[in-house]
Length: 156
Image (cartoon, one colour):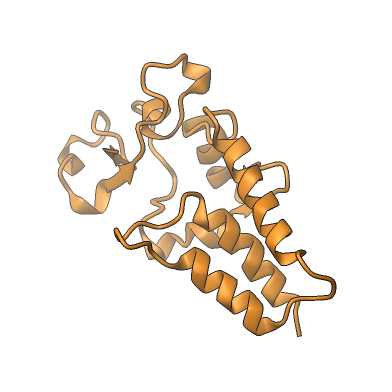
């Protein structure tokens, strides 16, 4: 893990140590060719249009995950951040990992015939949204939560 900046340090030196500008990020394929890098490693000195840690920006509600693991947004600036600034659809293993989570959730939901109840879906949402004994979220939990919350919204 490393510290990233949603406003680049080069272009906004006055925000260098401003907590509102700091984000936790993975290593992002450090040392790999640029086409396999992602997150802060790929971002370099470019600014993000949205701060994913700022609730006012509500990034999660503007993102969707497709069955093939693609992450996208109808907001052109956010879609630019996803694809051009952070390289989240071409970066090392990201798209494949999101696809695997979606497949695992679909498999879990489809394990028995018939539709899942709202209680069952809430239990799966609680499971995916909860932290483990070390206080960590499951890897790619937002992808699973996106799918499950959409399924819940369609369930009566």
